[in-house]
Length: 400
Image 1 (cartoon, helix red, strand yellow):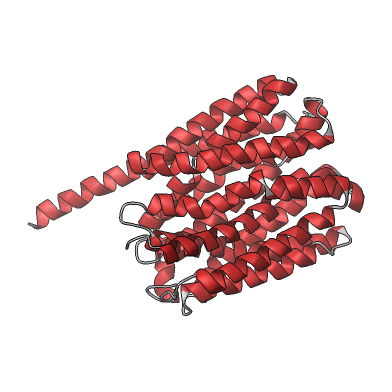
Image 2 (tube, one colour):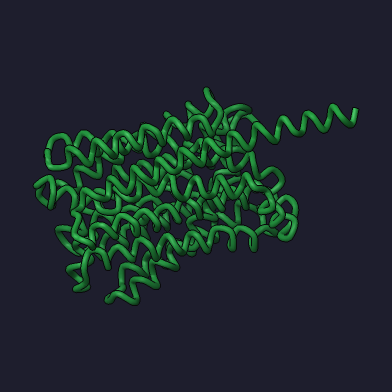
């Protein structure tokens, strides 16, 4: 399919949706101390809001994708963005721990289905052989949110009120749903085979290994990023106002990393690109642990970690779409569940040593360990795939 002007607009609409999703997912990390102070809870308790959102994604991604299979993809994307806008706006009006927990959970429900269905739609809108670049264009919205949306939201949260951060997400949501309504071309049904046939994708061992890889491997990034604000202020000695600028640095890194990862997925196989990315993540997180007290080095590493952490996104999304042949949208959305299980597990496991008194630098060690485990899983998938291919050839040779 040629990439005409209308297809570029459709990808831009997906990117705007990605911007809103990226902002709501990551801005909470920048305003964590402000939310904690406002609601009179501890920072690790405020970290539960990160986990609540992630849990919403984990549950919503497969459920909403599977249940919406009978409707055209462009309508499903619109409805998902309406839901996203409503509950993120309601987050801005939460006044206590319980109501914000519920609002964050409900805000997370459409996230995975939107990105999962959107990634497959982006691939269909792309020129042949350019699916990775099209998917990266959608994810670019998420990364650009970390350069523009998250720092602005963090600034508003620090200097005025954290509620304004989520109100801003609601405004972006309105822009996104209007973009989808006017620019997204009419698509076929979200599901190619139907609800029950789609579920058969979970019989494939490779799918479960890829989900595990995403959960643990990307959890390494979230272990570090969930506690970036207290790391910068308590360990490196930066002022609270510097947190916004550091998040811009991380966001710019993510933008570069997103497109580098897409290019790597075209040069190498998607899984080999994932292994390279996670290996670099282990290395930079270990360095980050060692030099966190240096105020200049921590800023340089914040940029570098942003690059390497987002190099993994598009390759692993492409890997799971290819492994989910016949049920691509469900498989793709499940990978978004896995990303957010990584978000939840990273925030949780990194919070444990912090709560035990080991300091905020311990989050980087937890992150390196999780990324390293991800490398092991990726190698296992490569071995599994190679053995399966050999066995298939043997069967074909025997039958002939």
